[in-house]
Length: 325
Image 1 (cartoon, rainbow, N blue to C red):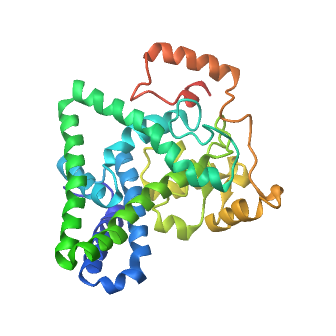
Image 2 (image 1 turned 45 degrees about the vertical axis):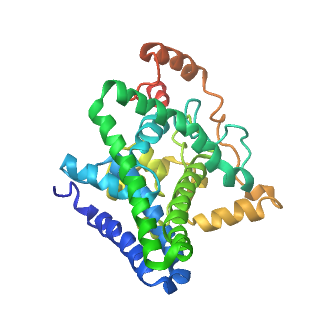
Image 3 (image 1 turned 60 degrees about the vertical axis):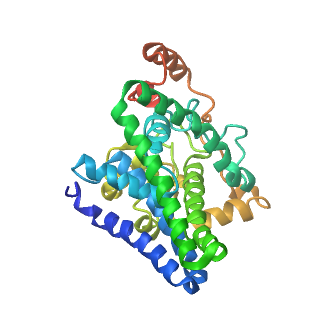
């Protein structure tokens, strides 16, 4: 059952501390006004851990990995298998170009606070199709995988029902429901919304057809708290690399990336983009390259060939961008 990588001792520590905090909040509701935001952070970290876990399974044992996926699902806010069809097999294949369910430019390529805030709802809607297709294929062709998916849904829903019931049993219907919302349900929504916002920020106005396909946030503090999730270009270049080694990958590729895509502070980036740029447009981002909606001719031709060979978007297909680049 041991860890595949020793760096994941911190993953396990975080996976324990988040639920422990919820337990303390259930026992001592007076602490909630001071700690609810910490619950939001841990829910977000569970989502990032789920992302890492789906790229690099945490344990040697398959049963331990499945149990860990269920545990993460309860506090992240959705069964973690959904990362596979929407992220591993879709986003990494198309990288914000046509075919990516999470494209940042679906209705507009403008970069403003309204598009950023509402991106979650648009992206979540379009990600539902890859999830449904993935479940349908598992039901028809892979019963074992289908059963695992059903178990994750059961654990996710059942875990939240148990938490809600526990809060109500301890504090009554009104206070218990409110306690569950503040410490579990809202942090789950915050995690889902924020992870999609990060995806938006990491790809909006980047050049999908070159090494400048991702915006990275290189703050050491941010990357400690979010398990190197800010080093997004490094992750896309080496999606199978363990999160603990992404800094080495980043240092190797950083000289080849446009400096404007290497942001130190996400907070300053947001303030400049959403508070200052509306009044001083030169402070905002601009589209690099030809734009993700305008593939180079050789890529457009290659994609037609690739689609014909696969018949449909293949779950294990190589990146259409990388194949033709």
